[in-house]
Image 1 (tube, one colour):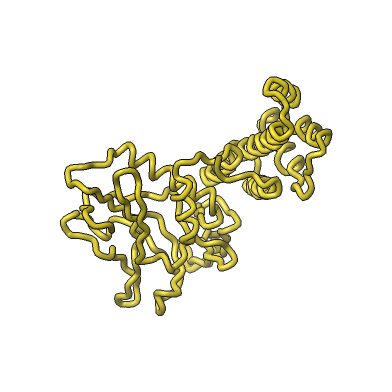
Image 2 (cartoon, rainbow, N blue to C red):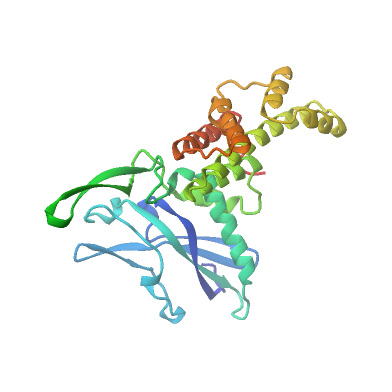
Length: 314
């Protein structure tokens, strides 16, 4: 902390989702300037006590009056022998606010807005770190396991259960992700990626129809931005740009226009089948997509944005 700054407040920030976290972040803090304030994001640390993990906040002042048991969640699937190699997920962090004058105070609504921007950016930068758990929903970071229980009279019952999978093949929330979110704190998330983020959130809410519609919108906005960028590079007037884009309304016409302009769509997933046709059934037939269909649409949309090199931020 820079000299002359004093602690003025502390906030618990709910990350809204559970993140698989790089264990090297546990017990650490990340600090940055925000206007006249100096903020420090504090991660919980893991200690061993009778074979079970407990949480503590390094250097937390008792004067703040915060109970360590009321924040953060670190989950493990085996006894912790080596905390430095511990796999964990995290749902809450502590943020300490410092200022040069003790009477200064960061406004609550301003802090909440700041926290939302950082969390939204993390969800866009590294969505694979997010773990979704539900009694009904399965996704690529969850699995169904058969568990055995015994009913009346000792009868064996086979029940399906959902368990979170901490898969080493999946990404963890890393220090560089947080630095990237903080670095871009004053930039807006690009519209295609914002729609993609909404699609993922709607899957977690079991709203597969909304998720498919979000994916379709993301793809169409992606193509429009691709065409608009081409127009800007070729110095076509804004009026003509607007006219052409109005005529090319909808996915099929946008793809046709891209081909006429010789804009490469090589490597693009078959979103016509996995997204657009399902969107048509949702809108015109009241179809409710399965979670597998929504998840496939989400993955193909995300891959499409990568193929076209859509920027994360505007």
